[in-house]
Every structure is written in structure tokens, then in C-alpha cells.
Length: 481
Ligand code: SAM
Ligand code: SF4
Image 1 (cartoon, protein in one colour):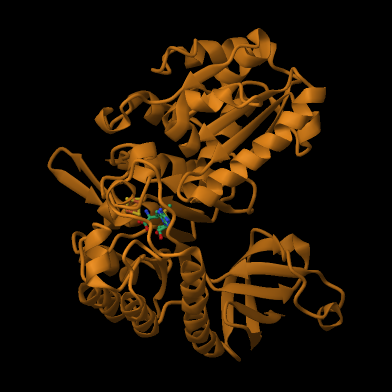
Image 2 (spheres, protein in one colour):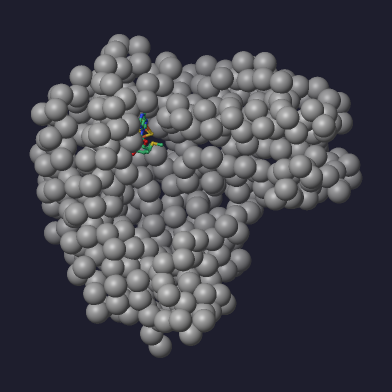
């Protein structure tokens, strides 16, 4: 079957697998961004429907799937080291099937089968075939590759994938009452450093009714916060008859879904189209969280041009100012790449200045990592030494930490509403202060992390917390009634 890339056989195959696969277990490990977490949730759902069970213990699994990321080399190295570990397990358990799913599978294709551990290679657009691929690998012991040939030439609307995604449950209980919903696939921006357009394919906006149907199903299953996903989600555009739907329309439709209380969206690209409509809808609709993740990447116009980001630093700051004027209290997060080819100390200092002016809630800083096949990798030498990239990374984070510290102090004494995620992974508070209740973590609508003592039963529920102490990235407080 692996040759059939259309997914047409999937429904017939599902029926067969229900019969064959009961009792077989899968272990899934997921690397990378929210898009990958969502794909993992869809894969989990498809496998569950096909009769597979799941195990946290890799050594007990009949099949192990790794959902991979290709955005930076480091992410791929982590996958390769994990595959090395699986190779050792397979020496004692040769029947175990190992599948590489996602961006790295699409990027490397059949080359990955040369790794001793790997039996299945499945690109992001082939996840609809996953149950079939795993079943066949378990039964026939044959290796299989399912990826999209010439991905940039592939038809953007992939009907089979859309049907799969619409029909599939989103099986993600990682954070109770929260789920991701894809609004868009792929990307057409072609930032010169970025692998995403080559592994996720052309940009396509999903039909609004499919998105809203999914949100309704999630709400029926207790989901309160949905995060709409797209690489440049503010470019969302869907033509239905005379009507052009933009992200603001999705906000309006999603706001009408009973049970959904918060709506988030990531990631925004700094551009004007639909920006006013989106901000207006954010300001008007109480369910849309006042949170905007809009990466700048750099503040040097020379570097922005070399990155093929179609704005200047001044235009970017203008967009932030507009967001703050139209949506009071909005929290803004950013991304930066340091050490892009030819980034001088002055270019970097410009970025430092932008971070001071932008007043982000937080930002993510990455060291430039050349990705094979991208324009930057083909045309520009990776000429900034690693020590310089590291130093710039640390310096930029320190500047942001100061800004975040100033913003977080404004919360002292205030009571905030949080959606509780569950037990805090890091014990921060003295449990005596919390009457021996465990430490919980939650987030505000603006995505501030809040740690407090409370009953574990609050996971997945809203709570009010009075902030008594802060660090730059975390607010600490007491449950208030
Ligand atoms: N589509 C989103 C956007 O445009 O912001 C996110 C794309 S990417 C998965 C997330 C972040 O990774 C980017 O914002 C960028 O800062 C960083 N990134 C992408 N390619 C990179 C590379 N080659 N080296 C270092 N960082 C990179
Ligand atoms: Fe990559 Fe740029 Fe597309 Fe984001 S917008 S996914 S950085 S190409």
C-alpha cells in the first residue's frame, strides 16, 4: 500500500485494522512546535480508532513513532540520538516497528530508511495513512516511505487530508480543557532561513465550517480553550461564494460556540492585511485572548531584507503600537534569530534596542541554524561563530528578562483569572504556605504563567489567584475565592 499516497484506501483499511490490531501498542514521542503537537494528537486519534493501544514505556511498545521537527539542526540531532537509542532496543526486540513522522520525514524521505532502526517514513501530509503504514509494517515486516514528491508543486488543497483531519478526533489530553485546531496548513512566506515551506508545503486555509465543527466537538468534550494554528495565521483567507473569511471571522464564529471560553491564535506575521479587522475583533470579542505572538526576527533592516521578511523595524514597531492602541492590555510575544549571516555587532545592538522598545511579555531567541535547501543556506555563508551566536542569545534574553521583570511586577496585589493546567513541574513555593496542597500551574488569557497552591481537581478549570510574588516569567499567588 505504501505506494498509494492518496489516502483513498484508508477507510477500508481502518475496518480491517480494527480486527487485526487489538492488543498492539504504540509509543509516540513528539518533538517540535504546536503544529506537531496537533499532528501527534491526530495520529493518536487515528491509531486509537484503528484498535491500537498506547504505552508510555517504549520497551513495551510494538511500534514506536517519533513526530519530528526540522526547524533547527539541533532538533534533528535529538531525533537521531533517539533513533540510536531505539536501535539498541530493537537489537533485543527485532519485531518492534519504528516510524519517523513529520517534517524530518518529509525533508529526508527514503534516506531515513538507511538508519537501522527505521521502518516507516511518513511526511506531515501522509499522517492519514499512519494506521495503515504501522499495520503493514507490523504484519509484513516491510519498510515503507510515504512523503509528498515535489511538495511545492503539490496541489495546496489536499482533499483526503482535509477529510481525515475533519473526521479525526483531536486526541490530546496533555493539558486538560485545552486543544489546538489547525486553521492553515503550510506556508508561502519563504523567509530565507526557514525550512517550513519545504516540508509543510504551500499555504492553504481550511474551510471555516470544518474548523468550527471541530471546535464544537472539542467543546462537547469539555475543551474551554482552543488555540488556532497557522504559520502566518493572520493571513488566513477563505473564499466561499462572495464572502472572504479572514481570521476575525473565525474569531466571531468560534466565539459563538457554547463551552468555549478562550480563543488564542499563533503565530502572526507582521503585515497589514486584515490586521485592523483582527485587532478590532480581539477588542470586541471577550472570548478572544489579548495575546499576540508576532515574531520580529531582527531589527536590522539589512538583515530583515536578507531574511525576506517584508517589513522594516519601524513598520514592525508601528504594528505593535497599533495593537496596543486598539486592544488595551494586550500581551505581545516575539521571536528572534541571532547570528544570521552577516549580522554585525551594530545589527545586533539594533535588535537589542527593539527588544527594549517592544515591551514584549516574553520572547524566544534562537541561534541561526542553516537548513539545507533554504535560500539563506544556498546563498549566504554561516559566518557568525557559534560563541558569538551564544553570547548574543544570552544578551538578548537578559534584556528581555529585565523588561519581563518590570511587566510582571505590575501584577503584584492583583487578582487574575487563570485556566489551570495541572501540577506544576517545578516546585517553587513552600508547601507549608499552601496548607499542604500541591502546586498548580495555570495561565492567564494573556499567557502569563501563574503558580499557586490548590487542589489538583482544579486542573482544566478556571480559578482566581491573588498575585503575591513575581519573577520575570512567572507570577506566584494564592487561590482566592
Ligand atoms: N511561522 C512562525 C513565524 O513565522 O514566526 C514560526 C515558524 S518557526 C517554526 C518558529 C521560529 O523558529 C521562527 O519564528 C524563527 O525565529 C525560528 N527559526 C526558524 N528557522 C530557523 C533557523 N533556520 N534557525 C534558527 N531559528 C529558526
Ligand atoms: Fe518559516 Fe517565515 Fe513561514 Fe514562519 S512565516 S513558517 S518563519 S517561512
